[in-house]
Length: 404
Image 1 (tube, rainbow, N blue to C red):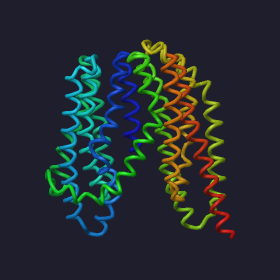
Image 2: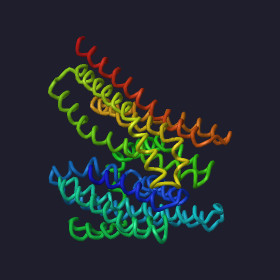
Image 3: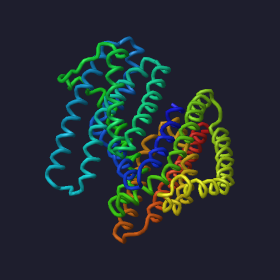
Image 4: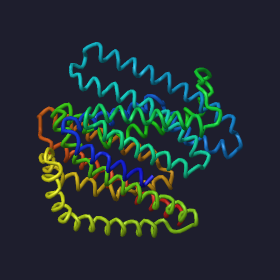
């Protein structure tokens, strides 16, 4: 998973080298739309399968997993078809006059449908504890899509990249279905039996939608207010945020299980939180000290290797702050350990409302890209501060209950 994350970071950087700012903006928009398209195609069934399939396999209910998986696959096929038909109606109705936007929207829908089936089959593989196969497939997909995407991008731009992503995902999905999935078939009926999976997955899906919106709702306003070229500058600077998310993911993979393990052993939560706070201080101080050498490197790299993105430099210091905050936004692991996840949902809804309000004001006043970058950072800082407060509150409450 780490290698796949690194490849993903390299991929967007290489695409920035090949594409113009406007084309990078359209590519970034397609990825953004496909994320929400996947939620529509699965309707929470993918999220539910992650939570239920491993348990069913552990209980020896393999036949039920296969039946449910095939029914979800059939549902995904129908929902993808419905999504593409809906997008086709929007495009042909001349609601959107920009042809490039129409192409991006349709390809994003196509990519979302293929990706939904891909991750569903991966959920089956992971549920059988085939960790090596799972990681290999993810890494292989990243490498192949990068290779083909870079090749096609030189001639066909962002459309070539999107088509390459769709082709690679479809081919790998077909291979997985044939050789790694037991008794795969398209079941286009019996959707009622998916109720248990839907009940588990719907709240998880809604939380995912809200979490994603809290992180990137500002981007929709950037492209709608300032255009695709400026959005390309914004997307280029956001490579920093992607790097921050990658580092945070690595830290959380180590911190999360350790917190759960230590709490299970009976270690005092206050001591664990104190260690985590000291770790946070060290990381933040290190990131502050790293800014100066990092800025010198950026000042040299952008004019020499990414001259078309010089205008993005004005917001890179701002995004660096946001990326730094993302790196240490791992306190949610404590909240999950204390089973207070509903507070995370409420927090993300509040952040969505704040970021949405600020973005609307920026759009109304037609403010610059710097303003939207600041709004993004405000959202990340709010998330960090309030997860820290929630964690401290949960620890104090637990300690009081133990003392009493």
